[in-house]
Length: 343
Ligand SMILES: [Cu+2]
Image (cartoon, rainbow, N blue to C red):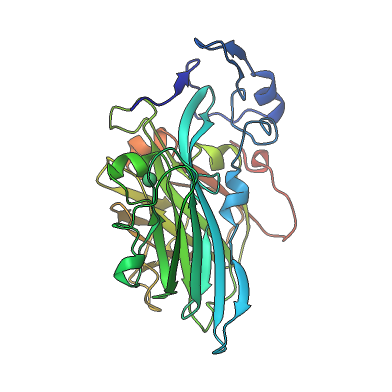
């Protein structure tokens, strides 16, 4: 299995905070061994400056929920229809100068966050435009033939329609389940499926964080780690939040090859609901540890404004990209910059 990987220059993954203009200045153009011409993004991956090649904006993904095409069923129930297309030929700059062959659902890693209410009928029109066999396997409760394991969907336009009732309430991953599974997962064929309770959760600033790893040299060890695919993204582009506002994070660990991952929050503790299936949190903590596909809901509020880190407390992972910053501001609408709080 030969996959395209072009490491163009030493990767800058230091803990630095260059301005956008510095990022742009750092762009370099190279000719690959096959004659292709590639321009890197500079010191920091930033969709503003790499729009031509960047297919994925982690800031947009963070709060992007796909509720599908909604219609009413004859019995009064709700039908939510989604079209998901698998591809396996995209090349993405995942870290400055590192181009990686990503396998995608609807063009991104992770795929779209699919969201429904408990009891809705979910219908997924799945099209495999890839060069390999793929499926969609949802965690949750559904008939055996909708499990996306034995009903293999062929390459080059194969189709399958998954249909099941949304449930149980919570956060569930979906991923391709074709063997070798680790290859199909580590290249990016996964996403998040949220099932809301009929009685909605309290209003909150909601986000999705998929913890993932990138094995860019194919030695079955990850070279990079991230929340939402791009290493260090939310450190270079802090997430703006408000003080005294409920923050709700749907978190899933999809890291392949490593047995555990974790999520540590600075200056605060969170209520944690494993799998999101219970209304009572299991713990009030600043640190959870997750095996692959373990997931849950975190809820917290910041009292004091300022800059707070969140990261894996498996230090290797945070130093290889799984780290970010919340900028908590007192006045909604105000745009904070990191320098307001020092570096
Ligand atoms: Cu697959």
